[in-house]
Image (cartoon, rainbow, N blue to C red; front, side, top):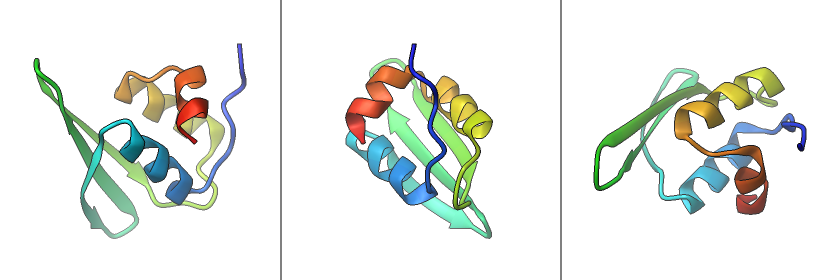
Length: 75
């Protein structure tokens, strides 16, 4: 299993947009994204930090329902 990298928030947004997520808004240092699936609407909020800590990124990916291998392919 691959380790979760520590990345800038811009790279994380780029990868999530390639997976179908849309940036809805940014308020202060937090960014809100959403993804519409046939079954539901998924929403994410995460900090605009450079870098985003590995533990925070792991939680973001869990909420986004993306495994680390799939995320690394999106980068």
